Length: 282
Image (cartoon, rainbow, N blue to C red):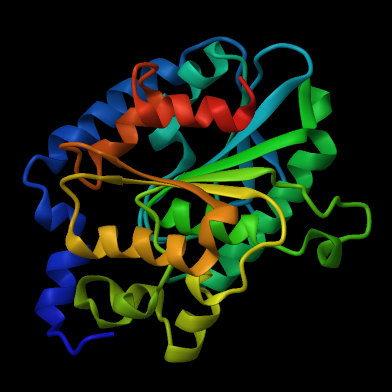
């Protein structure tokens, strides 16, 4: 990694500082999510573990349908599953059961702790999807920013080491929107470093680009055309590290920044939404 100043790392990764219109984007998410949560059919705050943060929401979509598990971003330290509920209805309308996950937040816990919570969540989804008319053999994960990092980690998980009843290919594919695949730079960004508490060793251990390519499953990455150079580098890094057998597409949404690129997942006319449907087999 090149020798850069703390200010440079902040300029690359502090998205709210880079995006003057971020209050309007957050308000759009809040309004759209409020409308989404008013939709009939949701099953709210299902426990996938004992901790109060280990809860998920389910939006069913018919019988025997594929399952899209969504992981919110917020640099592992902010936001809630309901802040991004707006992504669910368009995917449910297209025929996917949507599972929206919550997890504990830094600095109360480590990123490693969060990753292990989500392993528990995905095991719950595989074991219980059919109770909500979802097909456990067709689970796809999507996530934004830190959620994209976590989705990519779950694609690489050794599920049979987690529990003997879990299939090796529990996660069929992952869609990572503005994801992070090398965490070392974040140790050097003052706006974030103290909250996430990474060491050189933990940053490496939690970096998908430093892991062996998964033996099964596929990954699609999306980055906004207006995002920082580092987010574009991150996407190129995982594509190079895992290769075309795993990273089936690396896409850019023209004109979109690190925040409003997520809106594309909820837009049936967008490349990102269509790619999610492709991964789901819809």
